[in-house]
Length: 192
Image 1 (cartoon, one colour):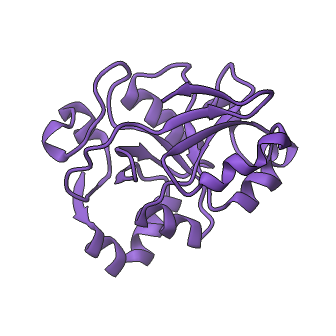
Image 2 (cartoon, helix red, strand yellow; image 1 turned 45 degrees about the horizontal axis):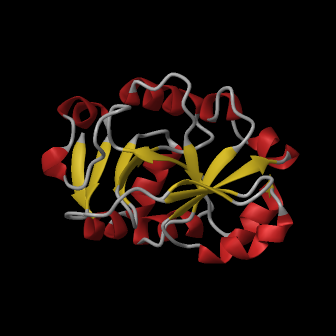
Image 3 (cartoon, rainbow, N blue to C red; image 1 turned 135 degrees about the horizontal axis):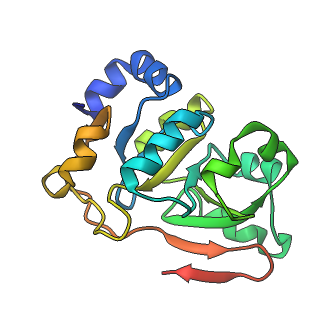
């Protein structure tokens, strides 16, 4: 495990992007709390993430590059299309993956026993870097399922710390997790 900061990531961006594409597990900042994730196409990394989180069946969300990407890869009640204008921001939207998304990503690993997926575009520099290179990234809170989420490096679970490949230290992020809104049939707030 290596701890880096924003400046180091940006100065050595090509190296770290390559590491993401090689399946490394990153702890990273968002606009809400710290997340832990990996390239959403890398099946072995997703399995490792499930082991780290001790999360058998609960779904993972993904960070995507744009609203355009959402419209091309998911289905939802178009009556609520304006809701997506809240992105980038502190929201996770629950949407249905379409055939295009199903063909490209291992959804059985990302969302076992589910038909829908959580989509995020955090308003944060790390997400912006991912969107520039069109990487879809698994996102979940940095904790063992059921424990408190991480707001800084001091309160991270040591077991998780030892299993991540990289930690991007961006100081204290003292927010709450994203608001979750389903747009599948009717607009439904799942977590505020």
